[in-house]
View 1 (cartoon, rainbow, N blue to C red):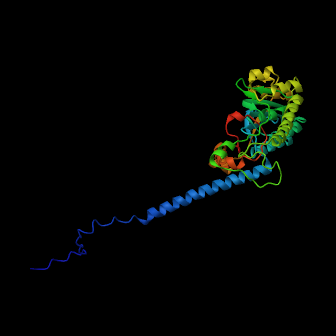
View 2 (view 1 turned 180 degrees about the horizontal axis):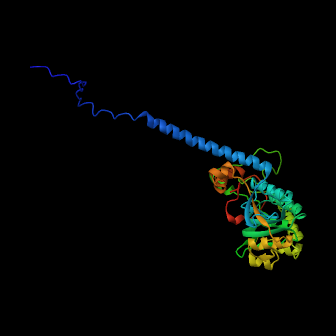
View 3 (view 1 turned 120 degrees about the horizontal axis):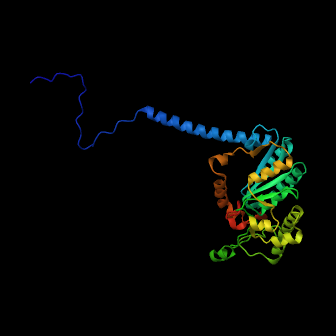
Length: 347
């Protein structure tokens, strides 16, 4: 027998039936390189998005809000500025509103301001800060109010910034009123008894943990907080009486039961002036300023990183639920419509 002729190919190893099939071929290295490059690109986009948001917010805090054309004559020199107050009145949105008021005050081309309110209220201090700045602004420029879906509690409080010379418009479906003060508090004492939780805080004064949710309030603690609530309540009533020319203190007090009023009932009780829409309020301001052509602009603010990656409401709700029990002992007096659901930082 003769040896087989060489074919130039390496001899194939005989398969071993005990070892199974040969391993699959390794993927080309270029596939792994493409994946790494794609991952780096995504990381770069996220970083640049964050830097852009921080850049815009930094310069917004220095230069104030931006202007966005709303309606009217785009080339008119004289302006009516819309300042929007929406959602819960609380930081960081309070600072944005205050910057918008300051911008309208300094801009000589702004001849009037429309306060657009769509809010269930918010913190007592923040509501009063906005009201105080509006009082200063109305000494120079007329203010009108356009109430949207809701202008209740603190939302009504800030509307008083228009003063006796300003006109408050509310849409036919607006809910307003809810005049009063609330300090949300959880009473978990019954649950604590069932699960064996004993509240024993180390404190330096009798009233340091007066809002402790794991025990009942004492009579003296309730008296202290009743006094605090009443002071804020009296301030609210007096501010309404001072700014609604057809209402006195006693009339306002009868209305300040926490009740919500429809637009029709609010007008009948003297809480608003007209039932109308934003365009009606703008027409009123244009007539009051006496300018035939005006440019209506809206103040806008750059989105923060949280606003971009998450909606503001979603980000707030996630954080609120994580901190609810921890913050339940922190007192927060609020001009707020409590039945609306989650109170930022409290529920």
